Length: 619
Image (tube, rainbow, N blue to C red):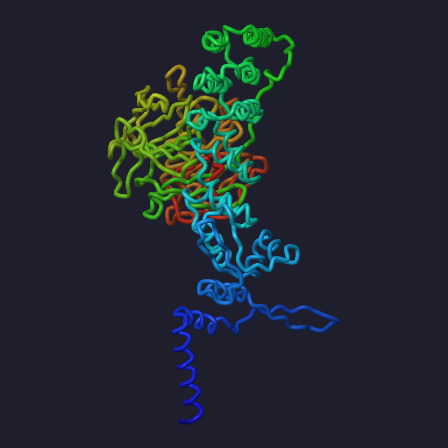
């Protein structure tokens, strides 16, 4: 046998011996063999005028930890054993633990001078400790609703900041009005300051929803006091704060009634309606029984009388209006006329300047409309990809990123107009299925009922709809009777229930988009039978006149339009040949257009858009 054969035989014998000692070694051996990657990133620096090459590997640290992870699994070179209360053991390496945890660094490093190889960790669950040790070695951890609190508590003890942050992020994404108070208490207990701040903000914003769940009824008095004294509490009316106090006290009246004086002092009675003060507050038995409460009520009535008379108003802590923090906003784009877009929903975050996917629609949604009511998006009507008109309504809750079925319309409608007016969702005109109609319905989200309203005086489709100053505008469209594109504009007044005609636009427009920005109504693009338009017009409700503004960079129809901040956003659409992923942005102050910094993930036409508050638990 020559030298080569002997070496090959020796290597085979060594592999066999290692395999007998530990079945995992060949896997580790293979990993080591493939870990020395000759492809390095080259960086050049200058020293005394000479170029000195420096070679760095962006993969070396990752590969090294892969090997160390395998070593830990097979108990190779381990120098410490961690023991939990139940006697179960986890082997590890002091150097690795110390590098990742100040807790272990203090235990094993120069400060601790701990030469013990067997460490008892009392009060720590073995399964949780194992997850965290595996996280140190593998950089991966599986966090669930069942283990997140235990993981965070132990990670906090071991000073594993990355794991604590991961658990905090998980809890932040689970925030809901039903659990936010518990998560807040947990964050406070373990000094998770970022989670605590985010949870406090969530409770401030969703207070009206939070009070409807069991956690609220179990709050300590001091916590409730701190909540209702918060100037940033986002409530539509002070009546909700009063009701929450009475609700909390009545849950355990015998023990809690003594807290009423302290709590009512923080309720801003002067900011309530005169009617509510007399019919609800004054009629509350606990209020009538106390002279102190009657003083607060008299103060409130006095304040309102002074205000109505135009006299100088006195100021107390109870006359100060609450000013909630303004939440970051998202531009949400729903559905579209292409197969990939029909169920797709995505949003643009104005702070990060990026697009993110949201939960898909449960059904295809094309040529419909959406309305925003109490932070929820309602999709109304539209059609499927095969052009089947729909009666469907779907409701999107940003807090949970979920869709649910809403109350269906009385008739099928596609190519309709949808808008929110006086807390009702209006469905205007449309087709059913190929017949144009001028009927209109209004949906009350509170009563969950659809009711008919005065029909439009004209039968058309493909018009643009927007609401300005409490009036609903229907702009342009296509008249099937006369077979022509329209420049006419209708205006609906919900108080009188009447439609009125106002000045026509300068151009006939069909499949245009409309949006409102800073008290001005804009109508954008569309077509007029001769081609796709890039022209844009602005309507001033004071002068009742339309004025042409700067054209878009290109012609677009089937666009979705929304105003936000200082700009008008024109989303998607097509130019007769192709669909767009881009968003055009108009600035009225400079009368200029630019393209949004990033585009949607897919092409969209006949889509719908809304601006919503960014949920605290999203992204």
